[in-house]
Image (cartoon, rainbow over all chains, first blue to last red; front, side, top):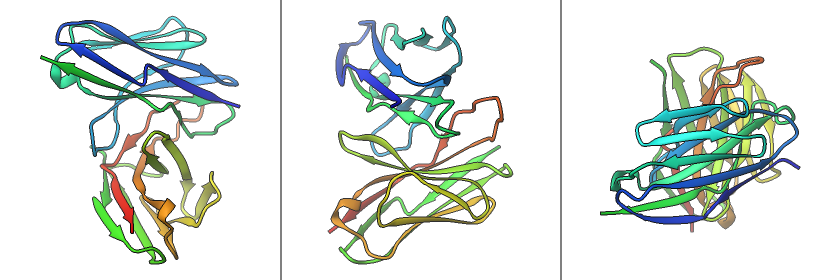
Length: 111
Length: 115
């Protein structure tokens, strides 16, 4: 069965304290891995798509990387406005067009 | 540019009452459309998806149903709500990509509380 596991469930950082969020996956053929940001009470907002191992994408303080078993979302010098839940999702050869989501990591950045 | 509209934003309904949530997409044709439910501690659960008018695939057996009467309109319904139907409902769309994979764009969500 295809699975996506995110860790940690929650992460508290001080402003400027860099860290990484993990998304590990067990799937039957990865077509793409997606990162989303979700603020409370709102729909998820697209951040990155990664397609193959070794690929990296960057946006402001965020950098996403992909290996054959996991993806990392690195947050460099975070600010309080980076506080949100970060969701990882995969699309596989078996799942048609549907995305399989992890449960997310809730990040809190304090000043 | 493409936009997605979802309404209402919040809804409080009694047990046993009917439900209708609507989602429309603008600025694109023949999108794939999706309904997800997000419950606390359980992540995003795919409920239905549609690749075309009248084509609905159900992922989870439940008392909910979905319809796609027009190309860019997706409706989630129930004849009789249960307490367990409470949650945050999200509509999403993406481009049919064939070999290419495209991420979803989500609506703003509907918070449903069944009382």
